[in-house]
Image 1 (tube, rainbow, N blue to C red):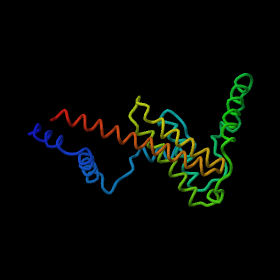
Image 2 (spheres, rainbow, N blue to C red; image 1 turned 180 degrees about the vertical axis):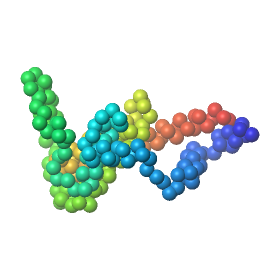
Image 3 (cartoon, rainbow, N blue to C red; image 1 turned 135 degrees about the vertical axis):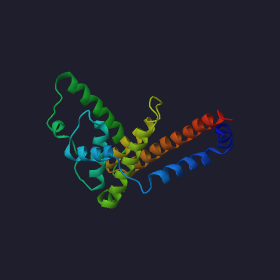
Image 4 (cartoon, one colour; image 1 turned 45 degrees about the horizontal axis):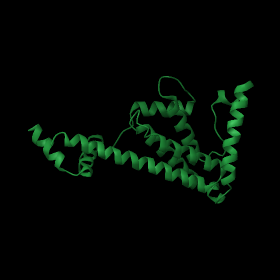
Length: 199
């Protein structure tokens, strides 16, 4: 019976297999609930708690995303980082590298469509893009490198918001979307390979 079910699944197109799995999880989880872990991430992000109890980078991502969606105008940093100073050779190396990156961006970047950055609705969209890219990077299979493009897209979107340059934001969106598309394409290929094992 199991072999027959496996052969039937293997005969279906990959999108049909994904649709069946999605429907099963939809029925199982409807109407959907947040797990306690999700609540803990949100609570720790709002309280500024960064420990080994949960991945601190996810807390930081949701902290920044939530504040960007809410329309925060200043760059947020953890309290400990606000008073941190880089001294000596480390500061010089960091400063030189940062200045090189800024100069490269300045050659291309200039304020474009600045009116978009003055509206709460557009900032909510930018925050949603950052959250979506972060989620795509988080869901990428480990040790595959598939989190690189979504992460780079998040960085570019964030820089575009800071520089008020919609072109950089759009470039970040394209890079992030390409990363998501690559994840889906390779995921479908892997699913097809697994289903073919039952054929």
